[in-house]
Structures are given as C-alpha cells and as structure tokens.
Length: 487
Image 1 (cartoon, rainbow, N blue to C red):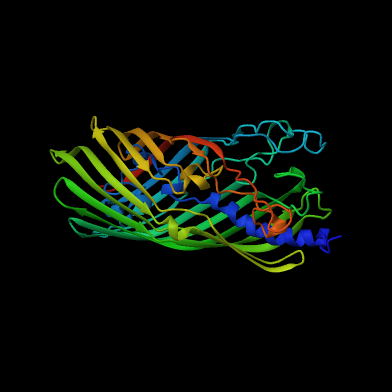
Image 2: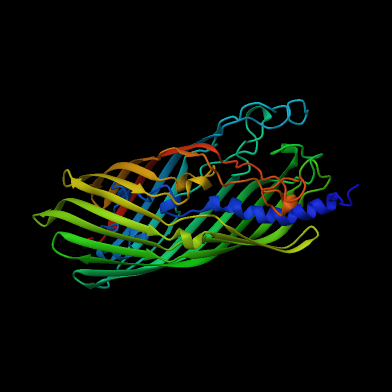
C-alpha cells in the first residue's frame, strides 16, 4: 500500500455530480440559435431569394428580422406568414480505431476502425409571422410578429451507433434539441419623405434538452484505457428561460434610385432554469441523481447595413441590386455559466466555460427583376465567416463552418395577395482537424482531460480529429396579404 486511498463509489458520485455540471455547459454551446456564425441563413422567402440582401429593402413582414424601419413604407394593414424548411447533412470521419481490448466482453468493438458519424435529422421548419398596420395614422406604422431563428444544431447524434458501438464523437457532441422563439412588438415612423426609423422589443423564450458524455476514470483497474465506454457518465439537461432584447433600424433614401439601410439588435443573456440528471457509469454502483440547476446562455449583438440601387421607369421599379454586410460579436458571448445548488452530496456547484467563439461577418449580394406586373424573380449569393477556430470544431455545429450560398426565388402578385418561393444551397468546405482541442473530461479529476495514472495523469488525446463535413438546402414559402393603401 502506498498510503493513498481509492475513491469510494459515493465519492465518485460526488465528483460526477460536480464535474458533470462543469462538463454540461460545454454541451450547451451547440444550442446557439442565432445568425451569422451559427445560423443557417436566411429567414423568409423574399429575403432568402436575394441571398439575404434585404436590410435596405425590407418592404414586407421580414422587416421584423432584417430592419424594423422598413415597416414605415408598408401603409395600410399587412399580414405575412413565411416558413423556411431546412434539410442539412453533417458527417464526421475520425481516423483510427477503438482503443478497447477486443477480448473484453464489455467492449467487443475493440480494435475496429471508428465508424462514420452522421446526423439523424429531418427537414426542420422555421416559421415567421408578421402583422403591421398604420391605423390610419399618417407616417406611423405599428407591427408585431413571432420569429424563430434558424436552428444551429446539426441534427440528433446518438450516444451509440451501428452494431452497438459507442459513438466516437460522444465526448465532443450532444444528443440535443432546442427551441427559441421571439415574439415582437414595435413601431416604425417616417420622419421625412426620405428617412424612416423603427424600434422593436423582443420577448425571447428558449428551451433546451441536452445529453452529454464524460468519463469517470478513477483507476486503471476499472477504466483500463482511454474512452472506455463502461466508464462513461451521462448528463441530461432540460431547462428553459426568458429574457428581452431590442432592435432598431433606419432607412435613408439618398436619391431617387439609391437607398441605405442599417439595423442592430442588442446582445442577450437568457437565464434558464431546469434540472440536470446525472447517470453514473456502469463501473459505479450508484443510482441516477437529478438536481435543479440554472444556466445562462449568451447571444451577441448583431449589426446589418445595406446599400440598394433600384432602376425605376414610369414610377415603377423594374429591377434592383443590393449589397449587405453584417457583423456579430460572438467573442463577447462565448461564456456559458451553470449553477447547481445541490447535487448528491455536493453543494453550490458553479461552472463557467469559455466556448471559444470568434466574431463573424457576412457579405450578401442580391436583387430582383420584374418580369411582368404580376411576377418577379430574385437571385443572390452570400458568404459568412466561421464562428469557431478549426481546432475547436465539433460534431453537431454546422453553423460555425464558413458558408457560401447561392439562392434564387420567384413571387407572384394577384390582387392583394403575393405568393413567394425561394431556394438556397448552403455549401461549406470540409474542416479537417489535425490538431484538436476538444478532449474528454474526466470527472474524477474535476473534468480535466487527464486519466487516473499517478501524479497529474496522462492527457487524453483530442476527440475531434478528422474530417467534418456539412451542407444544407433551404426552401422557403410565404404568403403576404395587403389591405388598404400599400404604397
């Protein structure tokens, strides 16, 4: 005996409770539901068909998302219902083989190559509803609506894959689901014939349902090798919360043909309440433990700007082209906080995780051409920078890839009703990680990436090495109905 005592099962469970919560906040970064670096653009058919270049046009209910000042030009009463349907793929090919011994009956997959990891996802609907009316008041328009930003998650990733093998990406990703909804109220005002402003308040609701795997490696006897699946500890987090945000925008008609638009939305921190359930590994004779928890998800401030040129003939617009740019300050929203007042025998668990996000920017170019009095066609393209360094790329985060998109659409006006359809292909270059910085967390060592060997322990190898691939197809449809004066 060397005088050191192995942790008992109860102590292991205490550590699992503490470190499990430290690890769970890393799982939550995948549930970000915002634009730019983590969203699959863009909302709404009329904007999507232009590649998202809509900040200086904003002439329908999508002004709710792109530039609230655009409602001032929408006289009378208007109703819009729009929905995107997103179909995406995500695959991850990890080099190497399972390090488990094939002779162990608990790990019959030992020595076999890591299988391809694929998202289990279905087409995802993303709706938007907007209502605006001037109530007969000159220059003033009131509006309301509900939007749901395009989901950032890349589908469901099970903890196991084919033939009972454990998912080789289970330490870098989550089995996840989440919903974020933005009910909105605001007003837009025509200050002069050439200058519109708008402001809106958003009630933000979010809910998440997350699974995450860590390791409880307290001895080489119970956990003989790296990523030994019987030592996996699973955290399941269910939480929801609300907060608020503000948007403001302006439209300036610089000349008869040229319009500039700018808009911004404030940063948000959503305090969420719920429960974390910790399922101990097979090597620990203990029951599941559920505890209340709070956590805070942060989203960045967003700014958009656009410049549009419209060709006008006989007082009617024939075609237009617009160039937009956006900036999102993700570096200021990269920290996720979690607090558990009591889990098992441990109290006041306070965790803070830096997710590594970087600021993102996008450029969009798009326009429309009026084929006839009733029909209009649209086209556009866009590029968005990555919101995460490649060494931190992890499964389930298609939105942080650099993105290139091509889009097109068509609309048809019949009386007060306008029908619009659009399609976009969102392409991203593969991200091959050769020097990863995503490691398993050992809950027996305060979730640090070290095994149970003497001293500090040997560091686990990164689990995000390999090639990450993603692409998406987006189809959008909308119905826009105008009552009364619309010009």
